[in-house]
Length: 369
Image (cartoon, rainbow, N blue to C red; front, side):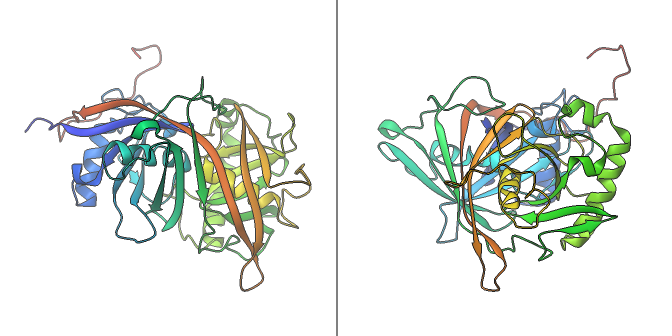
């Protein structure tokens, strides 16, 4: 058995997630070989990911693969990969808007995009879906500056602001063409504003929507209801069998408690998010503006401006969101923008676990952690 080879890698926090960022040329071109290598790099499958870079949670077991873009509308291509913690699975079936916050700085750091003297904007094609985004961040003197006074809930301290703007996408905002559908008698709103998302009032699933993520994850009857709902919604949204997919996400809605528009609890797809993803928030914000949607009666929206404050378990996320109509007269996203932060944590080489090494056994209660 050959020993692991060093792979160039940058570990970054993007928004409220953390992941390993790679140039595509530093990974195998074959997707199967690439994914097998990434499992060994991240330490999966193992609930602690003790032998890799992963942080034992879906929010910290993420990968970004970046390359120059052949699309004239983009500077770089960004492929997002979700590395499952406890299974040997790597999924490319969704985007990640939090990891997206680090793509622009990473592209400058790796020399894919020249930095401006004060600020730099990087046009990004999200390979997973074909959607586009532009991220703008400070580069005084032609170098990325991660320091600043921007705060986001769920991240300690402050950092430089990263403005993410999403142009209107090509996919339907309402995959079912309805603002409201029913699944087993439960009203839902299915939206896709960059991320397939199912909105449902928490009370319809026999919870309040104010529980902690831990309390919701330990609610086994809720888990069963969520699984059934998500599988049915996947077919309704044209996604097919989603039993092995990470989308659609399900977001529970409740009335706001702290001055926001709505309170949320989002599942990704089994674990409960400690905050909310950027693209998930984009779906919620758009969904709240839909007449007849399940969140329309709950939402406390400001009559002025496009800003929507979405409450989540560790604070809130502000997102700019406005709707128009498409050529068929159906609701369509017109503008979506959000401020995130990102930070370079480590830049160097990672040594993956040797190929063929068996994953560690699940620890027994009271055993070493």
